[in-house]
Image (tube, rainbow, N blue to C red):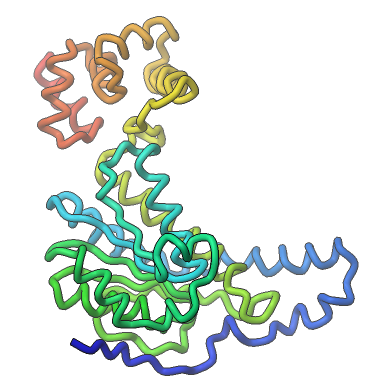
Length: 308
């Protein structure tokens, strides 16, 4: 089946010349850096303006994951590389299954290191990529600075037909809303310091959006307690030391008490945390966490109620 992403090739604001940097090639080094930094300062405010839309995407992603489904990222170039990075870092940071977040990058693995000619212009390749991996109930987040990259739009359209919910992160408020997009997140970053170099402000905006999106999703799913990473995977000495520090921070107990609790809990930080804070044994802490679907605060309430 032929995919028609309905792309309108209008100039994106990111491709226009920035009047604040027209003399950047005449500036001394310090002024070049200052000019770039001044432009960068506008990005967080642009991201803040789309927090309502981003919140809708977070809630949809959390719902998909709670239902046993997956989150997919789709991008090309800088957008795709940032998506791959975000998905990869969630596994060790929050100890999530490796298939919870799946990143699809135009041109595949080879394009992560070098440009693959015309990969982002192939809408059918994007559609094929998603047809082979998306299931009904999944959530798909596309990322494209221009708002019209054919690979991304084709992928979103295919995913929507398969029953996935979809969102698109764009830095082009002038791009038409593509078919197949449930939530449009348009971060208006304006002209780049170097015209068309979307690895700059647009890339920074997409990194901020991705980090906020995935972190908020993890918080909603109970992968944190307060602002502590209690679901992390302690795969080396540094991280094992961090689990003790997190447990000390959360409980106020000594390093020895926390180390002993982690040993009793077979290294499970959440179990050790509930056991110490609720004053119950490991078995009750484990059962409370299972009943609360891994949410520490809910498990604490349950364990304390049973212990009282």
